[in-house]
Image (cartoon, rainbow, N blue to C red; front, side, top):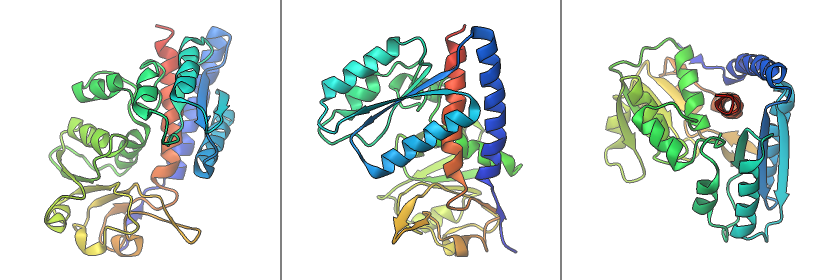
Length: 283
Protein backbone atom coordinates (compact mmCIF):
# COMPACT_ATOMS: atom_id res chain seq x y z
CA UNK A 1 0.00 0.00 0.00
CA UNK A 2 1.37 3.42 -0.98
CA UNK A 3 2.10 6.03 1.65
CA UNK A 4 -0.31 8.86 2.37
CA UNK A 5 0.92 12.17 0.94
CA UNK A 6 1.49 15.02 3.38
CA UNK A 7 0.10 17.96 1.42
CA UNK A 8 2.20 21.02 2.16
CA UNK A 9 0.24 23.20 -0.25
CA UNK A 10 -3.08 22.56 1.50
CA UNK A 11 -1.63 23.05 4.98
CA UNK A 12 0.14 26.22 3.87
CA UNK A 13 -3.13 27.60 2.48
CA UNK A 14 -4.88 27.03 5.81
CA UNK A 15 -2.11 28.76 7.73
CA UNK A 16 -2.11 31.71 5.34
CA UNK A 17 -5.82 32.25 5.97
CA UNK A 18 -5.05 32.48 9.69
CA UNK A 19 -2.10 34.81 9.01
CA UNK A 20 -4.31 37.10 6.89
CA UNK A 21 -6.83 37.30 9.73
CA UNK A 22 -4.09 38.11 12.23
CA UNK A 23 -2.60 40.74 9.91
CA UNK A 24 -5.99 42.39 9.48
CA UNK A 25 -6.56 42.46 13.24
CA UNK A 26 -3.13 44.01 13.76
CA UNK A 27 -3.85 46.73 11.20
CA UNK A 28 -7.18 47.58 12.84
CA UNK A 29 -5.54 47.72 16.24
CA UNK A 30 -2.46 49.76 15.30
CA UNK A 31 -3.43 51.68 12.17
CA UNK A 32 -0.63 50.19 10.09
CA UNK A 33 0.18 46.99 8.26
CA UNK A 34 2.64 44.42 9.51
CA UNK A 35 5.83 44.94 7.52
CA UNK A 36 8.43 42.51 6.15
CA UNK A 37 11.67 43.81 4.65
CA UNK A 38 13.83 41.68 2.37
CA UNK A 39 17.39 42.53 1.37
CA UNK A 40 18.69 40.96 -1.84
CA UNK A 41 22.31 41.48 -2.82
CA UNK A 42 23.22 40.67 -6.42
CA UNK A 43 21.21 38.97 -9.13
CA UNK A 44 21.21 35.27 -8.28
CA UNK A 45 18.29 33.84 -10.32
CA UNK A 46 17.13 31.40 -7.63
CA UNK A 47 17.23 34.13 -4.99
CA UNK A 48 15.20 36.42 -7.22
CA UNK A 49 12.53 33.73 -7.53
CA UNK A 50 12.45 33.20 -3.77
CA UNK A 51 12.09 36.93 -3.14
CA UNK A 52 9.27 37.21 -5.68
CA UNK A 53 7.48 34.34 -3.96
CA UNK A 54 7.85 36.08 -0.61
CA UNK A 55 6.45 39.32 -2.01
CA UNK A 56 3.50 37.42 -3.50
CA UNK A 57 2.84 35.67 -0.18
CA UNK A 58 2.83 39.05 1.57
CA UNK A 59 0.27 40.38 -0.90
CA UNK A 60 -1.96 37.34 -0.31
CA UNK A 61 -1.97 37.78 3.47
CA UNK A 62 -2.12 41.56 3.84
CA UNK A 63 1.47 41.99 4.99
CA UNK A 64 3.37 44.97 3.59
CA UNK A 65 6.57 43.96 1.81
CA UNK A 66 9.61 46.19 1.40
CA UNK A 67 12.29 45.09 -1.04
CA UNK A 68 15.83 46.44 -0.90
CA UNK A 69 18.06 45.47 -3.82
CA UNK A 70 21.79 46.04 -3.65
CA UNK A 71 24.30 45.45 -6.46
CA UNK A 72 26.57 42.42 -6.17
CA UNK A 73 29.55 44.76 -5.79
CA UNK A 74 28.19 45.99 -2.46
CA UNK A 75 30.52 45.62 0.51
CA UNK A 76 29.83 44.04 3.87
CA UNK A 77 29.67 47.57 5.29
CA UNK A 78 27.06 48.59 2.71
CA UNK A 79 24.82 45.70 3.74
CA UNK A 80 25.39 46.33 7.45
CA UNK A 81 24.42 49.98 7.04
CA UNK A 82 21.10 48.98 5.47
CA UNK A 83 20.45 46.27 8.08
CA UNK A 84 21.04 48.77 10.90
CA UNK A 85 18.68 51.29 9.30
CA UNK A 86 15.93 48.69 8.95
CA UNK A 87 16.45 47.53 12.53
CA UNK A 88 15.41 51.05 13.55
CA UNK A 89 12.55 51.40 11.04
CA UNK A 90 9.27 51.19 12.95
CA UNK A 91 7.26 50.06 9.93
CA UNK A 92 9.49 46.98 9.57
CA UNK A 93 8.52 44.14 11.90
CA UNK A 94 10.44 41.35 10.16
CA UNK A 95 13.78 41.57 8.39
CA UNK A 96 15.60 38.96 6.36
CA UNK A 97 18.71 38.94 4.23
CA UNK A 98 18.29 36.60 1.29
CA UNK A 99 20.99 33.92 1.15
CA UNK A 100 23.39 33.12 -0.35
CA UNK A 101 25.23 36.41 -0.25
CA UNK A 102 28.08 37.12 -2.69
CA UNK A 103 31.22 35.39 -1.44
CA UNK A 104 33.07 38.59 -0.60
CA UNK A 105 30.42 39.60 1.95
CA UNK A 106 30.80 38.42 5.55
CA UNK A 107 27.59 36.43 5.98
CA UNK A 108 28.04 35.84 9.71
CA UNK A 109 28.50 39.54 10.43
CA UNK A 110 25.43 40.43 8.41
CA UNK A 111 23.15 37.83 9.99
CA UNK A 112 24.39 38.73 13.45
CA UNK A 113 23.55 42.39 12.80
CA UNK A 114 19.84 41.68 12.27
CA UNK A 115 17.87 42.48 15.42
CA UNK A 116 16.81 39.22 17.13
CA UNK A 117 13.33 40.75 17.50
CA UNK A 118 13.07 41.14 13.71
CA UNK A 119 14.99 37.98 12.75
CA UNK A 120 12.10 36.19 11.05
CA UNK A 121 14.45 33.64 9.47
CA UNK A 122 15.37 32.50 12.99
CA UNK A 123 19.10 32.49 12.18
CA UNK A 124 20.39 34.87 14.88
CA UNK A 125 22.41 33.31 17.69
CA UNK A 126 19.93 34.69 20.24
CA UNK A 127 17.00 32.93 18.57
CA UNK A 128 19.01 29.75 18.03
CA UNK A 129 20.01 29.81 21.68
CA UNK A 130 16.46 30.36 22.86
CA UNK A 131 15.32 27.43 20.72
CA UNK A 132 17.95 25.29 22.44
CA UNK A 133 16.76 26.44 25.86
CA UNK A 134 13.10 25.96 25.03
CA UNK A 135 12.29 29.67 25.33
CA UNK A 136 9.87 31.63 23.18
CA UNK A 137 11.65 32.80 20.03
CA UNK A 138 11.50 33.31 16.30
CA UNK A 139 12.46 29.81 15.17
CA UNK A 140 13.89 28.71 11.83
CA UNK A 141 11.17 28.56 9.18
CA UNK A 142 11.77 25.25 7.39
CA UNK A 143 12.09 23.23 10.62
CA UNK A 144 8.93 24.90 11.97
CA UNK A 145 7.12 23.91 8.78
CA UNK A 146 8.41 20.35 9.09
CA UNK A 147 6.98 20.05 12.58
CA UNK A 148 3.60 21.27 11.39
CA UNK A 149 3.64 18.72 8.56
CA UNK A 150 4.46 15.90 10.95
CA UNK A 151 1.64 17.05 13.24
CA UNK A 152 -0.91 16.53 10.44
CA UNK A 153 -0.16 12.79 10.44
CA UNK A 154 -1.39 12.43 14.01
CA UNK A 155 1.75 10.47 14.91
CA UNK A 156 2.72 10.99 18.55
CA UNK A 157 6.44 11.76 18.58
CA UNK A 158 6.87 10.92 22.27
CA UNK A 159 9.41 8.10 22.54
CA UNK A 160 9.67 7.63 18.77
CA UNK A 161 13.02 7.23 17.02
CA UNK A 162 13.58 10.30 14.85
CA UNK A 163 16.52 10.45 12.46
CA UNK A 164 17.66 13.66 10.80
CA UNK A 165 20.05 13.42 7.85
CA UNK A 166 21.82 16.76 7.64
CA UNK A 167 23.32 19.04 10.29
CA UNK A 168 22.97 22.54 8.85
CA UNK A 169 22.14 25.50 11.06
CA UNK A 170 19.14 26.20 8.83
CA UNK A 171 17.43 22.79 8.92
CA UNK A 172 19.24 19.85 10.52
CA UNK A 173 20.22 21.23 13.91
CA UNK A 174 17.03 23.22 14.65
CA UNK A 175 14.66 20.45 13.55
CA UNK A 176 16.57 18.01 15.76
CA UNK A 177 15.95 20.34 18.72
CA UNK A 178 12.27 20.65 17.84
CA UNK A 179 11.87 16.89 17.63
CA UNK A 180 13.66 16.54 20.95
CA UNK A 181 11.25 19.05 22.50
CA UNK A 182 8.42 16.67 21.55
CA UNK A 183 10.21 13.89 23.47
CA UNK A 184 11.41 12.00 20.41
CA UNK A 185 14.71 10.13 20.62
CA UNK A 186 16.78 11.97 18.04
CA UNK A 187 19.79 10.88 15.98
CA UNK A 188 21.52 13.38 13.69
CA UNK A 189 23.39 11.87 10.73
CA UNK A 190 25.63 13.54 8.17
CA UNK A 191 28.22 12.89 5.46
CA UNK A 192 30.64 11.26 7.92
CA UNK A 193 28.09 8.94 9.55
CA UNK A 194 29.00 5.27 9.38
CA UNK A 195 26.44 2.51 8.83
CA UNK A 196 23.82 5.06 7.81
CA UNK A 197 21.38 2.50 6.49
CA UNK A 198 21.32 0.67 9.82
CA UNK A 199 20.39 3.92 11.55
CA UNK A 200 17.73 5.07 9.09
CA UNK A 201 16.08 1.64 9.11
CA UNK A 202 15.24 2.21 12.79
CA UNK A 203 13.66 5.62 12.23
CA UNK A 204 9.97 6.04 12.95
CA UNK A 205 10.36 9.56 11.58
CA UNK A 206 13.00 10.32 8.94
CA UNK A 207 13.85 13.91 7.99
CA UNK A 208 16.17 14.14 5.00
CA UNK A 209 18.00 17.42 4.33
CA UNK A 210 21.30 16.40 2.80
CA UNK A 211 21.06 18.14 -0.58
CA UNK A 212 21.68 15.09 -2.77
CA UNK A 213 19.23 13.95 -5.42
CA UNK A 214 17.32 10.79 -4.39
CA UNK A 215 20.00 9.93 -1.83
CA UNK A 216 17.63 7.94 0.40
CA UNK A 217 16.31 4.80 -1.26
CA UNK A 218 13.43 2.56 -0.28
CA UNK A 219 15.63 -0.04 1.43
CA UNK A 220 16.90 2.65 3.85
CA UNK A 221 13.41 3.28 5.25
CA UNK A 222 11.64 1.47 8.07
CA UNK A 223 8.24 0.12 6.96
CA UNK A 224 5.57 2.51 8.18
CA UNK A 225 7.91 5.43 8.83
CA UNK A 226 6.99 9.09 8.34
CA UNK A 227 9.35 10.52 5.71
CA UNK A 228 9.95 14.26 5.36
CA UNK A 229 11.94 15.19 2.25
CA UNK A 230 13.51 18.65 2.46
CA UNK A 231 15.53 18.29 -0.75
CA UNK A 232 15.24 20.68 -3.70
CA UNK A 233 17.58 19.38 -6.41
CA UNK A 234 17.25 20.54 -10.01
CA UNK A 235 18.36 18.25 -12.80
CA UNK A 236 17.64 19.09 -16.45
CA UNK A 237 14.84 21.42 -15.46
CA UNK A 238 13.10 18.93 -13.17
CA UNK A 239 12.89 19.10 -9.39
CA UNK A 240 13.94 16.12 -7.29
CA UNK A 241 13.97 15.52 -3.56
CA UNK A 242 16.67 13.93 -1.41
CA UNK A 243 14.48 10.81 -1.26
CA UNK A 244 13.70 8.40 -4.09
CA UNK A 245 9.97 9.06 -3.96
CA UNK A 246 8.87 6.13 -6.12
CA UNK A 247 10.62 3.66 -3.83
CA UNK A 248 9.93 5.40 -0.54
CA UNK A 249 6.18 5.73 -1.01
CA UNK A 250 5.88 1.93 -1.16
CA UNK A 251 7.50 1.60 2.28
CA UNK A 252 6.55 4.69 4.31
CA UNK A 253 3.20 5.39 5.96
CA UNK A 254 3.36 9.14 5.23
CA UNK A 255 5.64 11.08 2.89
CA UNK A 256 6.07 14.64 1.64
CA UNK A 257 6.21 15.08 -2.15
CA UNK A 258 8.73 17.30 -3.95
CA UNK A 259 7.51 19.79 -4.94
CA UNK A 260 4.44 20.46 -2.82
CA UNK A 261 5.63 19.22 0.57
CA UNK A 262 8.07 21.15 2.74
CA UNK A 263 8.61 23.99 0.25
CA UNK A 264 5.25 25.78 0.58
CA UNK A 265 5.51 25.71 4.37
CA UNK A 266 8.81 27.59 4.57
CA UNK A 267 7.50 30.96 3.34
CA UNK A 268 4.29 30.44 5.32
CA UNK A 269 6.28 30.00 8.53
CA UNK A 270 8.25 33.12 7.58
CA UNK A 271 4.98 35.07 7.47
CA UNK A 272 3.89 33.52 10.76
CA UNK A 273 7.17 34.65 12.32
CA UNK A 274 6.59 38.15 10.93
CA UNK A 275 3.19 38.33 12.63
CA UNK A 276 4.80 37.06 15.83
CA UNK A 277 7.56 39.68 15.59
CA UNK A 278 4.99 42.43 15.06
CA UNK A 279 3.18 41.37 18.20
CA UNK A 280 6.49 41.30 20.11
CA UNK A 281 6.69 45.01 19.33
CA UNK A 282 3.28 45.65 20.83
CA UNK A 283 4.10 44.12 24.22
